[in-house]
Image (tube, rainbow over all chains, first blue to last red; front, top):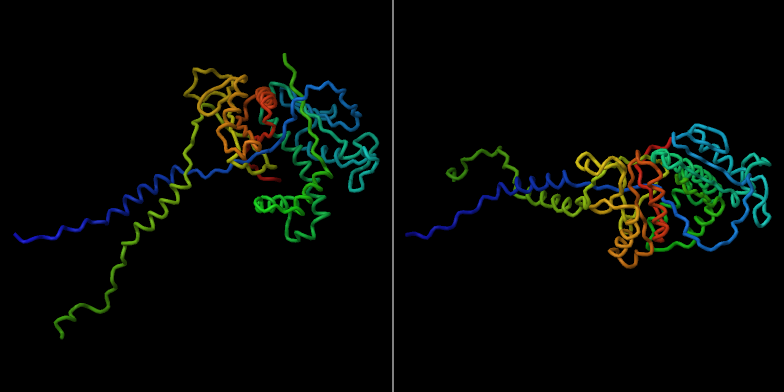
Length: 211
Length: 154
């Protein structure tokens, strides 16, 4: 018998098999990037030190009741007005800070009965146990937005010259920091800290009352 | 001479498909590498709230805690919102232990930078969330990210 060469395997269906696998992975892939609001919780403090006295005018109280109604500074307002009210409070600059400096970058109305200085301005938030998480997040979002607005304003006042094309200077700075996270840029970090110091985030949350 | 030139000159040769599998395999490997299979299946309803002031989350240093009403397959657990960690329901008292366990499984150099990602259903009451936060304070895991969907800023 003559020796026959083994017939070549038809590789034409290889593509079909690969496509099948490909489509499976395409469908199951979720390239998801989670985003959210980053907040720091206060550490538990057992020391019995008398808390410092905060004057009423430096305190911005935000209450949410069980029916998701918003009470800000003893007045019921819709959530759409919360952001502006917070900005007005933080940016008021009616007096001086601990060191006796007045707020020369504040553009508020400098009212006597609102906050003295962004350093001293504290937002105090309290909610009921029955408040929905959605409402709670909406309020948090508005408060963070107020801080971001003011920081953005200061960043564009101080550092616009380094980011002439950026629409939002503070965001651009944070993005640059993110990009260069493996090579520390001292100047950039210092600038970000400067901005944060101008409007330090002082947001205290009270525990909801237990029944 | 003419014997070998019978074929028409104008006909185009068929395009070779031999490299098609290679291309497809390349794509396949990309998606295989990029795929993350969901590691914990959710036993709760999880509709996230929306926010527009969001920051990105660094996944490598995050421990996720879920909370919400048990979903329809898990009706036997009732309708009260529950906390889920990995694949099981936990109680508020277990949060601390779970967080320590999560931290222990992490890379050593990231352990001090741990962020707790809270994926909470938007219809949950905020009291449960503040219970979780209180436990996290006790566990000294103070960085918290409230995970939210991105809403367009006005």
